[in-house]
Length: 234
Ligand SMILES: Nc1ncnc2c1ncn2[C@@H]1O[C@H](COP(=O)(O)OP(=O)(O)OP(=O)(O)O)[C@@H](O)[C@H]1O
Ligand SMILES: [Mg+2]
Image: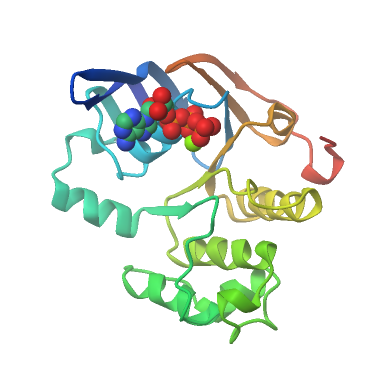
């Protein structure tokens, strides 16, 4: 059987006037359904570029990307819109909540554009925010705002959850709680989750680790015994 996610010799070149930046030179890897995958590598390695291509927010220069057997790298911009809307949940470093909507309204807004959304209040409850439904983002702590952002992505009921440095703006303890939430979601709900990080200690929590360096995948390992986030120190 073929993998759920498949990157096949992906290249990405950004052209800035005369200058060419090779953000991805030759990226190949796969991810199985239900896995928690950690992508690790130094700054500028191409991690965000890779995630944006997988999430349909950027296009590749050469190669192929398959999700569930579908060649998303051949999608038209209209197909990519539907793909981003229905299939992908995205969590960013700086939450990106709508400031003048409450926590509940932020989640409802995203759920409205999907085919089979989950109940917004229910999802907020599942991330421990049942007492914060009517708070605006500015009235929430960083960790709470990130929980809302995760709830917003979950409520879309996506095939794939993509998180770009989801704890980058958070303190140690809050970051840990967020990672535990993502690990639980993958474990308990069988969701396929991809997390980008600089921090190689976090590879211990993953079912699969993909190492990226200078635009290439330099390592891909399956971790037979991933560690609960609570037990990792960094
Ligand atoms: N839109 C863009 N236009 C031009 N160059 C870009 C663009 N996006 C990324 N790059 C370049 O591509 C390379 C890879 O960038 P990318 O953001 O994917 O790295 P990263 O691994 O996510 O780094 P970080 O850990 O700092 O977030 C870098 O050299 C970056 O400057
Ligand atoms: Mg990045």
